[in-house]
Length: 160
Image (cartoon, rainbow, N blue to C red; front, side, top):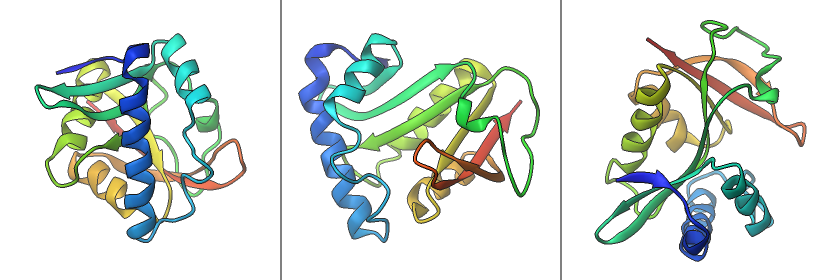
């Protein structure tokens, strides 16, 4: 079941993100989520905005991610390509799963898409896992965007 996260979920969510940082570092992407990113204060802001979601089973929380409908300022400018359309869209950020290889990330990505029908996301050039998830789920590589710290990300979109 996917639901909005609650404050009581934060400790479990922080553990999932910590494990995701280790997984990324061990799989050729040591520079994306550094210095404890995403940290508690950022997740608390996501909670306040009601944009932090979890995938939960009887075993507990198995994934966490940010999803919202609306404009992502980092997506205003895209290089080396273009967005599929300029219609209103949903945005997926910071998805992390507790256990790899169970298809949980795809479940979360598809849930987001089903809620909006036009979705954008981005990932680090070294985050091969997330690139595969986007592509496996029908997202099209649209170009390159920059995030707040000035680094580049590969931009993806899927539309009905």
